[in-house]
Amino acid sequence: MAAEQDAFEQLEQRIQRAVAHTLELRAENARLRADLEGMEIRATEAESAADDMAHLREAVQKLETEIATLHKEREGVRSRVEKLLKQIEALS
Image (cartoon, rainbow, N blue to C red; front, side):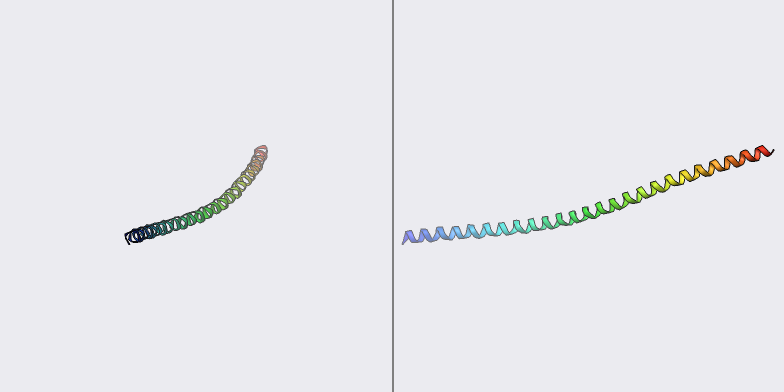
């Protein structure tokens, strides 16, 4: 009878440890799921930021091209004005 009691107590202790371990694992699982959700949100935000950066780079390239074009046009206008001024001076 004592052997059966000891075996039953050992089984009870094992079950209690298994239950405690299961509860710890569930808590850890919940924490890991929350961490994963946070990481997924940050990954989505990073992808969005990367897309925004790509659009900004495109806009900057367009503006740089437009600035270069405007500089060329300004030089052309300057050259034409200088020619006109020389022609006016020649008249004097």
